[in-house]
Length: 337
Ligand SMILES: Nc1ncnc2c1ncn2[C@@H]1O[C@H](COP(=O)(O)OP(=O)(O)O)[C@@H](O)[C@H]1O
Ligand SMILES: O=C(O)C[C@@H](O)[C@H](O)C(=O)COP(=O)(O)O
Image 1 (spheres, helix red, strand yellow):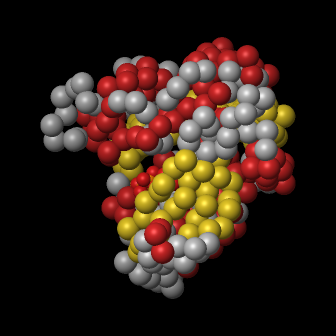
Image 2 (image 1 turned 30 degrees about the vertical axis):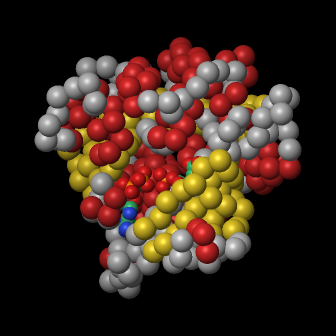
Image 3 (image 1 turned 90 degrees about the horizontal axis):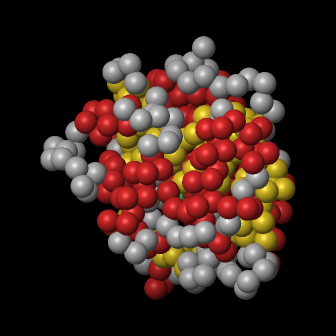
């Protein structure tokens, strides 16, 4: 048995709630966006990327979200279906809302940024009565993502999904996914992030994301163990703190800590590192693996994605992740940065 216990009788391995968007990734890389002429369109949005990753890894998945009633919205839903994700809980907006767009700028493999267009975004209009209790009840794991807490009614929809998950015994994973431009203030952000995190079994975030949540607390040395310990007094069984290329550290409720180095990668851009890490890591937990093995698998999945142009489209299969680890162990892959 792994560190987290799942209800094996449930027929859906993984359900995610939150944003479904579009990534427009610059084709002419290694230059500022002012000089970019063409972009390639992909499905994006952190929880969407993670769900696509889980489906590519062979799991039974479903998504709860809302898309615009336009070509972009239909592109997203069709892509989910093509990837084998149940989209029956994806609602369609009828108010004229639009699809969120993320234009990516790739100045160099390590200097990447995002320009977001999120006015009147359909994903934040997901209402509580559009959250499928049946899908949450059927799922072994529910993933929530912080950006969906930024505005009502999506905020209430996520809290209702958390209630359903608690009621029906779905393990809850929280990818902090902090996107400042979606929020009005850091104070408001920290309040809602902390309220949601109290209810979650697994919390994954970068050091900077946890810093934001700790703005009202004392952790002057930004100590990962201090950060993690707080959550074990609530629902958490596992807290993962990511440090980019430096790797990641996971703490478990029994006081143990586990570290993972990152693998070498020929980085094209670092978009999607966190989402692919989350997919690989959570997949491992669902297989009942030890924490270190889950972290290794997540780290390798991340390298595959950051070595490619896209995030969602590059999510690897299990075979590809195992192959990457073996090639690294044989010294066949070296880093470019
Ligand atoms: N330059 C890199 N080279 C190799 N692995 C990386 C690199 N950047 C990130 N990773 C891997 O992806 C994981 C998540 O990346 P991180 O940047 O911390 O998250 P996020 O994308 O959410 O900001 C890291 O723990 C590491 O395993
Ligand atoms: O989350 C978004 O809206 C944008 C993503 O689709 C994008 O590819 C990205 O930035 C992924 O985030 P990360 O995994 O934290 O790098």
